[in-house]
Image 1: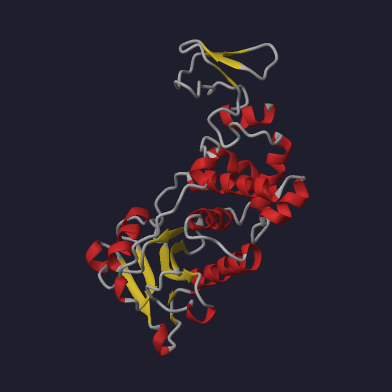
Image 2: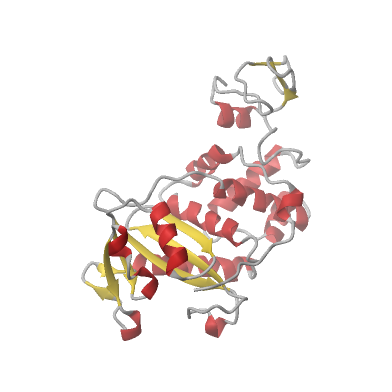
Length: 291
């Protein structure tokens, strides 16, 4: 509890607030585990309003699960995690989804700026292996779009389609205007200069993979690693939860220069995210896939 309180509210708990009303006027009981708000008079613990809310799993098991999920290069399956921490597979799966949801809920700065080059590309998850490399609207396939700074950060997101009406808004939302972008020759990127971005391409259909500094090798390498994680560790990921796995991969990529301890500590900045079990298992409406 003390460790979580320090991560959530600071070492001296000066940033402690009431999760019920947001008031900063709170006080602690003598046991150091229970708090009360002076404004709404409600009691709370450090777990209230976090992913640990209402969880009967001890915090020590939670912390071990967080460490394993963030330190394993390709992630960890719920079956393997359940063996490590001594829970059922169902509990381990729910814990992992909450851990991913906390990462997904984090706010990030825009990519680019400072002369950095961004590489963009899309890939496909699901469907028959022989068809995964092709742009298509086959329903069982899910489109994942990536934007990566060279020697920098990445954004990985599950999108509705690989069309310009979907990809261009994602670029505008995540990349600073004026940034130079490299891509392949997919037509969805053709109007990037009109959107205020520098743009250069390589034509993979003609076996052109690099032209001086113009290439997409960083994002292609990331896709290779991402797919080994999906197909090698998790084996199957539903479209409903795919964004959580994208966010998990993005977090490990963006913290790749950190030690396992630093990555573990950094995860706690998003503990305010809460994901009830009913919300996690509610029916999923499949995207209407159009290009």
